[in-house]
Length: 345
Ligand code: KG4
Ligand code: ZN
Image (tube, rainbow, N blue to C red; front, side, top):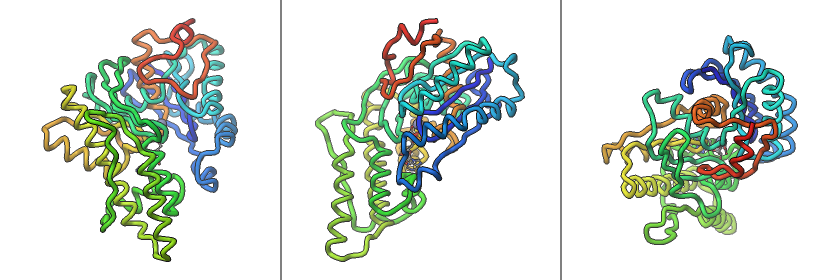
């Protein structure tokens, strides 16, 4: 079954064709990163405007590269939540137009479920159940993937996401957007020196995260150094901050795996490209003889191949969008906000 998917939840306009959830026939990504760079972060209105300009060309390219025609496709999939609402609406509306004009069924896909599915593209043998740490710019979740469309959340963040904290730390250190990526490039192999950040404990046995205190801590550390007229040791500070965030995530995944009996663990989302996090997770899994699944770096960030992959499994479970499908800025991973509407035809 060949599915063409569209992804436009943030600053990437993407379209891809994937066969049976695993075989990529095309994967086109138009990133707006250079344009948002001058503002130090994504400007939602600019993102929406670029999506509306680029989406036709990106979809056409994905279709052409796949060797398919509208007649040889079986379905369409689209990210409908969560994300920047104006950005999501562009993709959702375009997909609905395509579905209406081609007669192809439309499958609504949750963005984070898509990130989890990026593992199916990189690891052909991976099947649920497994435990997955989803770390992106807006979300930090430890989820039990009980089935392809059956999720149970074990932990979330009480405030900022891991990616948000890394982005803010990078910005405070004077590194350009996208912060997390540049922090990794600049400080990934650096020595943390004497700086030591410690992560908060929210209580005995609590798996949830909190990143806002850590974010404040690095900003205050930088201010104090500046007030004393000292040079900012960017590489050391960055390395030590990343080490702390990666240990925080890894330790909680270890707790969750032990408590809920998982020995197969996957990472997903933009932050799963982080070299320190990948290394720590590899060490953890090796030590415990657990199986680790890492998405290829090419599939960690936003792309439509992962949406097509998850779309395949959503299709098998019966998910269909009606012509009244809406977009949502927030939506829990394990529950659909308005199931009747999403599944109405
Ligand atoms: O999944 P994603 O591409 O978009 C969202 O759905 O949010 O994740 C973006 C996040 C940003 O915070 C970005 O800085 C971070 O992923 N990121 C990284 C790396 N590459 C991207 N963070 C740490 N290390 C990286 N190598
Ligand atoms: Zn994402």
